[in-house]
Amino acid sequence: MDRVEQIEAIIDALPPEDFSRLARWFRERDQAAWDRQIEIDPASGKLDFLFDEADGERTVGLLRHWPTAE
Image (tube, rainbow, N blue to C red):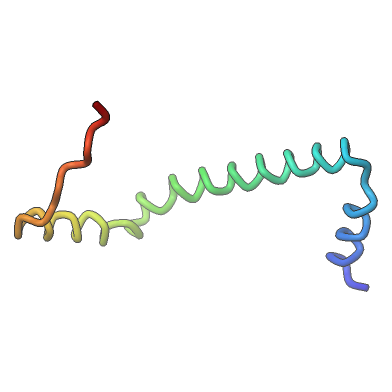
């Protein structure tokens, strides 16, 4: 049994309250990692293609305004 399988077995044995606490910790950790990545990607130029695509669509008249809630 490898390390991950051991962790999975321990998690499976947790009481519901502890499992919920651990699940919340994972969600918060995952969200924090996502937030960091969202800050890094635009600064690194990884998303520039989206701006280029939108600019190209605007140039040929294909860019539409986002609908507003009424």
